[in-house]
Amino acid sequence: MAAKAAMGDTQLRQNVRHATDVIQAKRARVVAEMPDWQELREAGRQIRQHTMEHLDYYLQEFEANCTRAGGVVHWATDAEEARRIIVELVKASGSSEVIKIKSMTTEEIELNPALEAVGIHPFETDLAELIIQLGHDRPSHIVVPALHKNRQQIREIFQREMNLSELGEQPQDLADAARIFLREKFLRVKTGVGGANFLIAETGGVCVVESEGNGRMCLTLPETLITVAGIDKVLPRFEDLEVMLQLLPRSATGERMNPYNSIWTGVHPGDGPRAFHVVLMDNARTSVLADAEGRETLHCIRCAACQNACPVYRQTGGHAYGSVYAGPIGAILTPQLQEMHHAQSLPYASSLCGACYEVCPVKINIPEVLIHLRNKVVRQNTAGVAGLFDVEAGVMKAMAMIFRSERRFRAAQRLGRVAEKPLVGKDGWIGWLPGLLGGWTQARDLQEMPKETFRAWWEKRGANGR
Ligand code: SF4
Image (cartoon, rainbow, N blue to C red; front, side, top):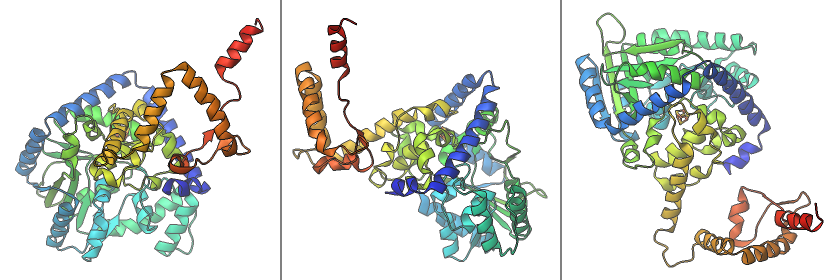
């Protein structure tokens, strides 16, 4: 239903198509200038695989080194515990406001509503997140959360929410309005909350990369800094950043390097926040790790290249996925982070064309994980109904029987042509199927069978001596 609504929104589709085209073109340019791009991807894959195989070790190493440097590490089993810890930390800091760095993890745990519920006002400082917050909207993209909005729409939101009588619609005008709106918050608010791109086990350091400089403000100006990160964000060594900081910006925004790369370790007198907390959150990541076929999902570095390349995402945008993580990565991550029965349709939100796999900087074989998850959905749906007729399994058995015999196959083709006649529309497409098969055509159209099979055409051609 969500996909249908998105498909009907022409403006949204134009915005998504335009933005993903621009990012893809930039990515292709900067990737093409790297002669060792494939070797870098392989290095990235190996680093992530090694980390996940020894995750417990590296997390403990991170905790020890971060603590030694003056940070405080908290462990959260799930989103609820992470929210509770952060709310308590903000309260303890004595602040009723927080400035936020863009973080999909805080979206995942729905932190803003939890803060607002206890009277703490969060200010998003990333331009795209600010647009989402002021527009009372939801992110639709991992890297560019307001990708579904165009300039005119952003201008309307800013004018309305910032009480601006006049505002141009040039990028400079919009950036100036956001800068003026945020500058005073940066200087006033004493507590910062954000996520992390990487946690470095060897040093206990935290790395955030960004393009606007708002993150740097949030990391240096507040007295208290709270970072919330999934346990999958850890990297073993500082030098692993050499690989990741080449792969990530090129894949994410088509930049050779992010304009702002911040790495901080604990607290230092007279320099930056006086208190630093890291909330390390599981939220089902350990159960993803336990699944040998699904675990490479945790290798993800959230670059969104797979979203930009995906033909399904490019048609529908992110909201149709009903998940914080949209696109191919959302289709494999969300069903594993949530109980599968909450997101059964997501593994099917893909054409399995492989475009996501081709662009993934850490070589996650997304199509393979999708098929694994589809298997899980089918197994889950048929569990407990043994003995009852399962439509999908029945259809597959019938197909197998037909394909095993040329005689049966030819007969099925003849029968199919007769049976489809009343269903074919004027345009040559079948838009609905009756009975139990109706579910299949809810989101698909089927093309009319060709008037003549290739075999018949070939035989005729032979008979004519050509
Ligand atoms: S799955 Fe790969 S391409 Fe997609 S966001 Fe993650 S790292 Fe990027």
